[in-house]
Image (cartoon, rainbow, N blue to C red; front, side):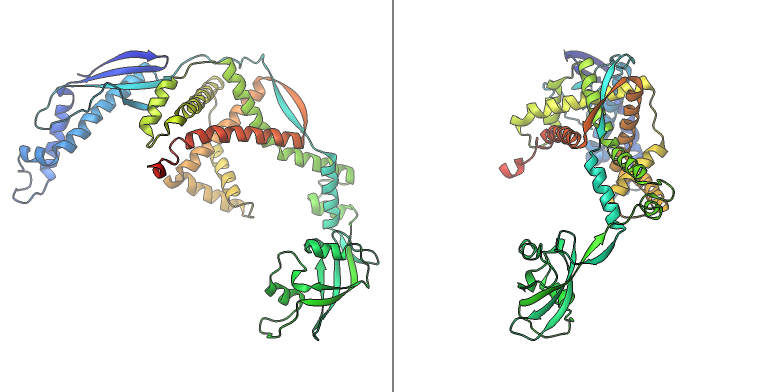
Length: 471
């Protein structure tokens, strides 16, 4: 039978020697050859009568390799299970391991050496309930509430004709006459859609103001076809050519008169009966904006919580093994980037271990329904906010959960669900110190956090980048 011995190469890093005797794999090898003989149809031989020597010559190498390394894999798995090792990556051939030459005609004993990296087992610190942790309370600027109130009033307001100067947000009618031509038309333009030069020309002007403009450079981003169709009202089949310059006169100016925040408007803006006056509307707006930051607050809290727990649980990760594993696992390694990549991977492993320990400590479990909810959120994000029914989302999520090609998406959704539960568990465990922070400053802090994560992830992404071109 196989015998496995181990040699410590450092904390979390061992070399194991697997002794594989002929008797470990010979029965399975012969059994597979027998199965092959019984079903093989080879010209010149009756079915089931192909000589073993012929089969060994034709198929022996492949069959033996599969059987042999299956036995080795089972022994490695048993060793890992018995030792209760949380592996980093997978076992890799030891530096002093030479190539194994398997011979299906001469079965013999073999010795194979592997290196294994693993994460330590420990009792997590820092989650006793006596700890204090900061969490941000995002303060919504009053100007944001004012702007939203103005938007609601204008959104439900009506445009009325005014005898005033043209200003931001106005719509005005121009009577246009072709210079050196006889074509005339009237059309409406929105001040905010004008080009920079056109805004300068019309801002502050009153009805009756006359000027000459290039009608094709009046509105920002409007094509020649659009100008002919929407401003000059020349049909697609109209062959007339017109000059670009037109003499225009401001005929009328229309401006939105903001709506009063009566119950009808409030019901349309917030839902029937949700708020009944402007003060309640302002409070609701502040609440809704605040809720839009809850996910980011939790993300930042989780990030800072993990940093804190990393300090409280300072354990070794076998960086030297990680370097070897990365070089074995990845092709075209950038040697000069290996140290940074290994350090980043080691930090990822530390965080993974801490997450596992929190899950064990807090007995966190995730249901299929919770994963499905996250899948639905991912689908909604992918659809960029397009209005779809709940039934559509539900059915689509069911398909995603079952389809192997979406496995990565489901795994990411499961990770999100786990992190949500860990975050909630830590918030319930620790004594939270709520720190007020203005929304703009908070957004900057979140951006900084995301930039750090992107930089860390980039170190691994860059490990093999560009070497194909260099070669």
